[in-house]
Length: 189
Image (cartoon, rainbow, N blue to C red; front, top):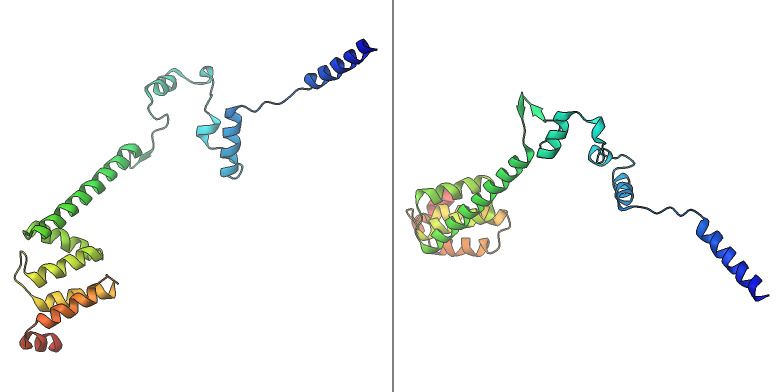
């Protein structure tokens, strides 16, 4: 009796183990995720990840080993290297940011030259609120330029329209610092 029970249990367990179980590999999981993200479409980099070598010619295998692009992307008969363009753009942005920080530091130190003024004016053309506020400050204090309270007042008013914090208060301070002649000149303009 006990032998028959053991036999039945072993038989039932063997049936469970005999049923083929589909094991999903990481590659299949990745492909499913990419397929869901791309509305059922698999991009070439996913489709052709495991292309057999016998389907490729010798030059393609050499390009794969050297990690060069298989199909050069061309425009106007020149190869476009997107990786280097991206790195170059990031480098340019970093350099511009460093140059802007250096400009801010020279304004803080009170030593503004034509180079810094040009940088500030370039950013003002792009409606950079920080540059506009710095430019107004420079003209209000006369740092590197002849003091011009009328111009500083107009710049602070422009900054106020662009919702720069404290621009209205700074414009009021500049207006109070103006002489009667400067106020009349401001009103006449």
